[in-house]
Image 1 (cartoon, rainbow, N blue to C red):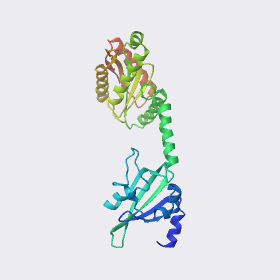
Image 2: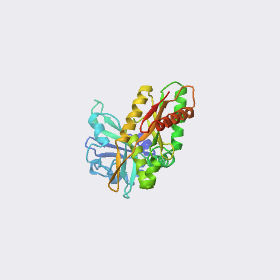
Image 3: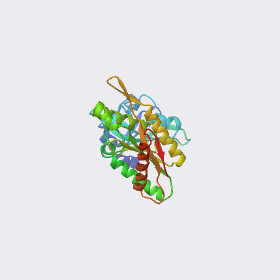
Image 4: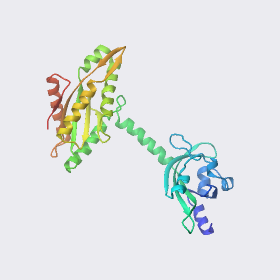
Length: 298
């Protein structure tokens, strides 16, 4: 390697190493030494397939003995990028972002590959903290649905979208019928299980772009994105029916519940709170009409 380029590569903070066609290591820079704990003299001439770094993916699957990014890049001639975990010389795992490119000779034939990898620890742990914060700050711990704070953020975003006349949003406000009676008869643990049953049924049967939130004690709110009046009515009726056909076992007794619902669209000229008020009035109409039904109003 040209000494000028070697000097540049040796001073990079990222790890860089070259392999030949047999995946034998032909160059190992100082960044690679720092991140992995292995000195160049310990790895030069060895094959990365010998499992020096024991790269694994997030599921713990070993990559070095199979189709790792290096091997894949030399096979199809395309650049590769992956988040993997290498084993440091001291034994612990380090999350790294690897970027691989094939190396070609003057005739365009692939004769090896270069891998650049960076210590991803700070980003990895930041993402984990953000995920944990998201779960605790915006999720209801009992049902797994968005909590009131999370739903408020979703509605705030929806109001801006509707104002721009982009996607239309539908709201379905649901209340569990005779929930107090369930608590009084079977206890609060049974009530919690019923809440989980209903929330999970709703969450499992909406699209990825939609959201379910716990709006009150036994009230749940479904926010549907980009729906018209007909789609809103069909979705609300489907969710009502699915809840009614679900059940749990309490001390070998089958316990079924139903929900009453009010469904409406957020109008372009209104605050989501007005649409929520309308959904609440429609929910009350469903209760007054015999429960286990949906009232739709625009």
